[in-house]
Image 1 (spheres, helix red, strand yellow):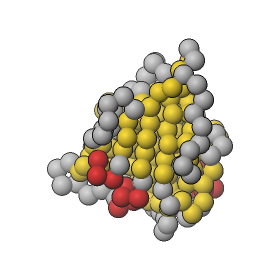
Image 2 (tube, one colour; image 1 turned 30 degrees about the vertical axis):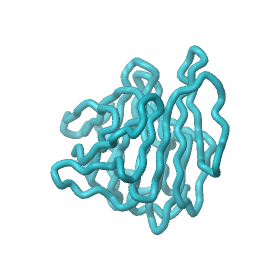
Image 3 (tube, one colour; image 1 turned 90 degrees about the vertical axis):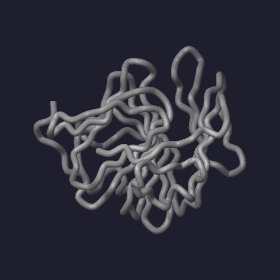
Length: 200
């Protein structure tokens, strides 16, 4: 697990992440797919409606407040219906799944408070995580290694490295996940997962 970059917010209040806001750290390479994405996120007390052809999703946080995420890109296919994770032991819910040619998978994920994803690695895929809201930890459960997920930092999980995410007790954790080597929406959540058998 490596912290490879960060996102500069372009506007106070709601967060606007444009390609020029994606900054590498210590000469770490960042995937070119970042140049094809625009991510906007923020808070509202009512439903957020789809606008300007973007794919927009809102997540209830309780007390009538919603956190919303809008992802724009040249998606060849996408699904914007919330779906629970197929992975054993995972409590993640995916609000968006999309494919950008040739083989980039984009996910918007929420992990409820005090919940986690499965511990797994991919044999053929690299994975990037962009925390948007909340706090949590990134873990390699195979070697008891972990560190906090800080807002706007970009985390990189190379293939064959066990990893999982865990949310803290406040509101949960909302992230954008970018996967290299994905051809269809269906295979993003179900293919190329090797699960850690020693995980609790």
